[in-house]
Length: 388
Ligand SMILES: Nc1nc2c(c(=O)[nH]1)N[C@H]1C(S)=C(S)[C@@H](COP(=O)(O)OP(=O)(O)OC[C@H]3O[C@@H](n4cnc5c(N)ncnc54)[C@H](O)[C@@H]3O)O[C@H]1N2
Ligand code: MOO
Image (cartoon, rainbow, N blue to C red; front, side, top):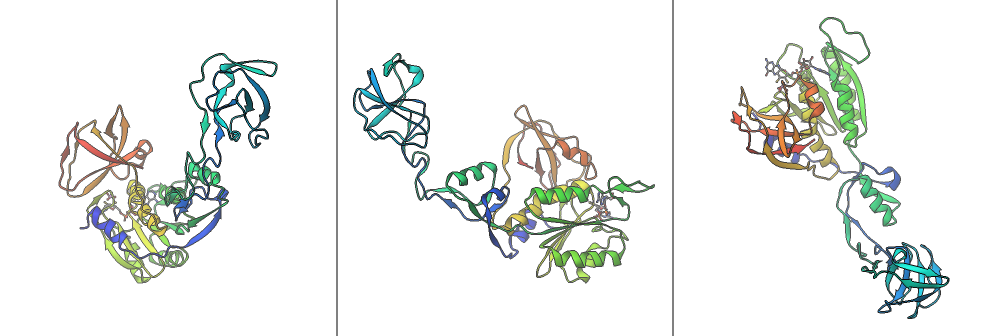
């Protein structure tokens, strides 16, 4: 059976067509920046005052000084600065040419038009042209656009951004036992949590997502819905119906529809019956129905493919830390993803009872992987947790 590494290399070997479009800066939050951003201006574009105060000539530090004019931010000095004189200057204003220092207001006393030094000003209080970055410098590498990135691009004067188009994602939940939240449960039925959860995961991953509802475990309904969903999306995610049961029609239906299987089953826990394949236009993940499997497989594998579609590599933050509590496994034939929390500078496995125990994920901040063949990981061991 495939290992985690095998699955990543299968995903990495897929050819995808990266499409790009220009977005207004204000609509670009969460978008996939697909080219480095290079500055076309110096920041700041001129030597500017870092404090409200008095601009004085280089070396003319004793005072008193006569105030010649006031320069507000956005304004420029009109009179040359000379020893014995100063310019009242506001934070952000361009400093006069001969200026070597700004003395903060609180270090001085004013009498009419004269400024007296009360205390020595230790700082220069000037932000020099290009001190933050220079023209031609690479400012941002390709990545998902954060609020800070958006601010940075605005500071460069960009009003549009080139982003890659995220894949269109379709979500189909299968299972005759499922009811949508808000409906009445009959005996033997459960609420569909995978549908809303996968829609939320897809949206959070920056993708347009379409929901196809709950499809009962009958071959005809599945065939019709999957046929439509495959034609309307770049990535289709199915939940449930991929294991060994009499009503697990998903793999067979996909193959009937010409979706070529790449693999079915992997040595991973949760998620052993994971199915993956594609036709010319759509990739399909058949995720096992158990909610924790669905959640984790999306985070680990589907997100990896989404980023690839956008020309990026998904690199979750990894925290190296000390395990706070021993992990003992009953079975160690698969590599296992376990939800963890960070506390008191240690990594703690959560109370987690298996792949139907969805509420364990509510408190999870990260995942650790316990490799195939490992029965126990002792408290105090060094582990690597990837953030969710
Ligand atoms: N004989 C075997 N049986 C099973 C095996 C196996 O290797 N041999 N694997 C087990 C594992 S591991 C998993 S995981 C499940 C996955 O099975 P399916 O993908 O076919 O999923 P279902 O049977 O449809 O559902 C499993 C479980 O999850 C619940 N579920 C399904 N969909 C949803 C949803 N949208 N929201 C919430 N919960 C959902 C469903 O009711 C089941 O309880 O197979 C094992 N069996
Ligand atoms: O692989 Mo299943 O997802 O362990 O329960």
